[in-house]
Length: 376
Image (tube, rainbow, N blue to C red):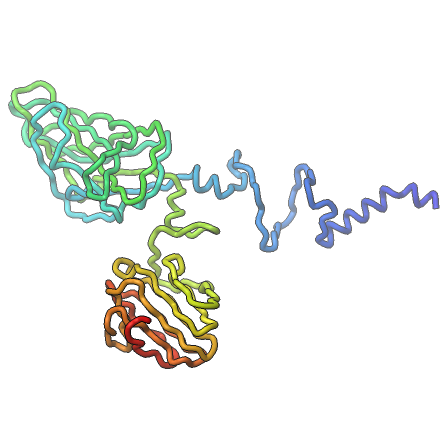
């Protein structure tokens, strides 16, 4: 017995090795393995690696926080006819204006993005360098003041002009403009992070700085050419507007030319149910003969839809919140505020979709659905 007891450490080692080999963690909490060198692939079996530290070296694994908050995405905005466009119209033209003061923020030469082309909210981090590529000249230099240009990038309200908030510093100045069209690369330094809120629009000001000379020169700034654009690096957290992360909310649009796969959400209802805008695209499984109320959102959110399904032989009454809303059943618009009723058969179902303002179209029906008359 003594000789076996002397081998206790060997027995423990064998048990530990066996536990690891057969997938059992002998001590699941707070194990310090030191540095482990793999000689093959590591399969996590569908589980996550959690609480991964920030990457420090080029070949370190990167966690989601580093990806979203430390990696940048660059937008290319092309200069249009007083617009900032994500897509180029390649047909060069020119904007002109003669300043009447020094310095002068020009009022007919400016560039503003649409709300759609400003995918806010997003953040421009401190230390970012915004690059402005422009082409400009003056109509004539004879008897005119020496003129240089600089630019300010910021954002304004959804009206396209109100409450300008600057992003970064002013750009550096061009050289003195000549009567020959010349290209310039200017830089805007961002010393403090700026977050562009939702519904705002990017806006670029053009400022004429005039020197000595008898009269102001007419400024020409060119647009609609690949060479005339702004490079705006933004924080990669903007991807959250377009990619639905676990537990996140998708705020950007989804436009797919291919199938989008995955299970639809199911709402199991026991009793009368009022649907919400957060439940678009879900199946409502009714298990009792009751009323289903649609949200008051069909005056603005076209494309909202629900599937309403009767599990058993029970009558389902679908009603609207807005008395101006009407169902379009089998191609015929019902009277506004009338309800949509199933005939009471098991498995009766209908898809209701807002396809135009105040019109819920009924399609994909199973069983009989009828005009239920004025809502009870």
